[in-house]
Amino acid sequence: MYPYDPKSLKAEEFINDAEIRATLEYAEANKNNVELIDAILENARPVKNGSGCTCAGLTHREASVLLACEIPEKIERMYQIAEEIKLAFYGNRIVMFAPLYLSNYCVNGCLYCPYHLKNKHIARRKLTQDEVRAEVIALQDMGHKRLAIEAGEDPVNNPIEYILDCIHTIYSVHHKNGDIRRVNVNIAATTVENYRKLKDAGIGTYILFQETYHKESYERLHPTGPKHNYAWHTEAMDRAMEGGIDDVGLGVLFGLELYKYEFAGLIMHAEHLEAVHGVGPHTISVPRVKRADDIDPDAFDNGIDDETFTKIAACIRLAVPYTGMIVSTRESEAVRARLLQVGISQVSGASRTSVGGYTEEERPHDTEQFDVSDQRTLDEVVRWLMETGHIPSFCTACYRTGRTGDRFMSLCKSGQILNCCHPNALMTLAEYLVDYASPETQAIGWRMIEDELNRIPKDSVRKIAEENIEAIKSSNRRDFRF
Image (cartoon, rainbow, N blue to C red; front, side, top):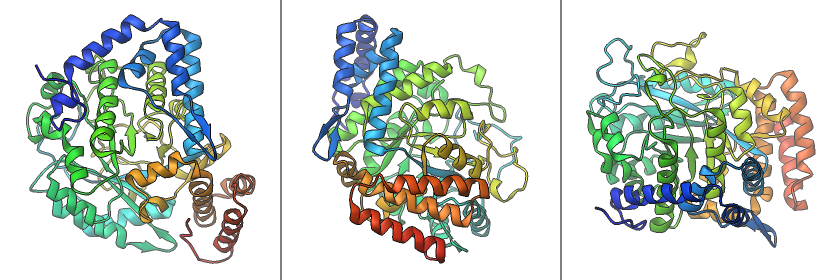
């Protein structure tokens, strides 16, 4: 029996099975305890202090009580507070990104992923550097500035040197007015030395989904390959931070295991990072198991419905208020719209989950990792966000000015978002409107920018933002930032 210790560096101590089970028992016993639920909700609310807000967040036990709650009016209150928190710390901005699949060669045997080694009929492909360059140009021509690169785990086909070469290539491509300004990396757990190399290459966030925190299920779902090692995988974020990467992204693949167990483990992982490194996860993603080549999501009996999924997202926002939350094109337009109301702050747009997919006129399916539910163009997604009152942001300023890790969190907590991230979002939206948007999107966008400039508190900041936006409209000058 392992003891529970959030400050431990051992996976089975900071993600402790006995503690999770005790948490779930406590949550079940208190799921209709109105007095306790009201106290937890009150504690979760953002509190104004001077120019900004503070938020206490919730412990994994408190958050698990809310997730178990069955009282409709209390659930609705959770959703309201989740939206309050998101607006308090991120405003109405929604950060845009796209995944870029480099290679689907993989030596693992993951039962939920079509890239698994035993799948002999999927087309295997690895991009050359020229092909990476072509993909980047295609993404730049859409208007993307931020990518998340993806690759299977294969030490022969996808060694760290290949990933580093790809990052260098991506950053080197300057096409028309386009640049990729931030490369996030979603690759397999690796060594401290390799994380240092990734940091030196200029990556943004290192992302690694846990898939499932339930160790027995984890080992069953990963029967072969290096990913089978639960501890090596679960402790990866600590090695990444030791290697100098202070922005890390967590996530579980909902549907593999019982969602309440996964939720508790996810919040405990965030608590562990805060306890050990002084800063929690930069992002938390909420993917669900989806159909793919030789993968049937119905084979996994822990699927969750849309309302439960919404509740999970809201409870994550209440528990980890300062963390960016991501929902991808795995989800439909309707589901993404609902989750935007309960705390999501980043979405992908016009994603293709196949290797080399962006240079193809028709969406290829032979190398897809999963079905894409939201297949709208980036322009359609940008217009939809603005029509629903959100600012599509292509900003990467914090990463490039050193506002990462605890420095970003202090900015977020101090309430300086409206004087920093807000004008940066408007300036990058102006770039998109000038360089890539359809006339209809342009019309909506310029009206939004005019309205939103007035929300910048500092007159000096507003004036500079207005001048920079005029320069974007009248010249080829780009990449203004605070």
